[in-house]
Length: 260
Image 1: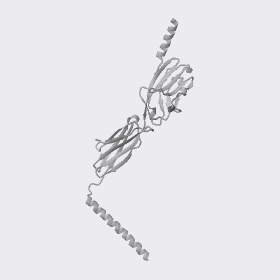
Image 2 (image 1 turned 45 degrees about the horizontal axis):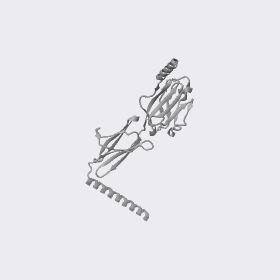
Image 3 (image 1 turned 60 degrees about the vertical axis):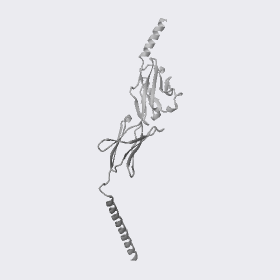
Image 4 (image 1 turned 180 degrees about the vertical axis):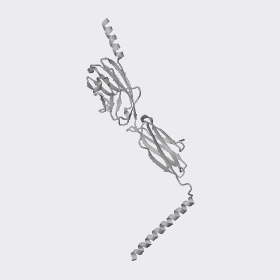
């Protein structure tokens, strides 16, 4: 009986010493790229005892399983089919890191890395964060009798920091619309600035801290405010008279050549 207690005490101490190490900070991966979830453990010389299970913390979905010296994917979630892999050459060195190909919005979440070998069992949680670069902003300008609207449209993820700045760098009031993320994992963003002045000198800024993206687009519209409406009418009349005179002259020359 004493021997049994001693053996149990030794086993518990060995289990307590065994630990899994994962990143303390979130792992950020951009849309379409490969995510690498790091997970390291104290290796055992007998790899046949090694059991590695990756699963979502929020649900019982199996992301990847390895035991009996090979992958065991019968219970793997269909969402991860043909997208996950371990580095088999690194398993004996204590590396259970998992690769997930073609990162998408639905892959974001907390992942459990559970490792068991002859030295014990432990687990760690890796937070995976999804992001997408915002596309090149598409500019449109709407002119009305009472105001002018300058608008940019683009797609990306997550919700960015948007600001309109005046010529002196002051923050301007803007209107921002952000639709829900689509199945493709992107927000559709529409940001506009409205002014009553026909002369515009503004800068649109967008920051996406998740991918360290910083965009700035300058819009400068001007007009000749010195030209009065009566002057414009005179100039237009002169242009019309010149056009009629030129057309008449060409017709006269054409008819003269025909008579010859």
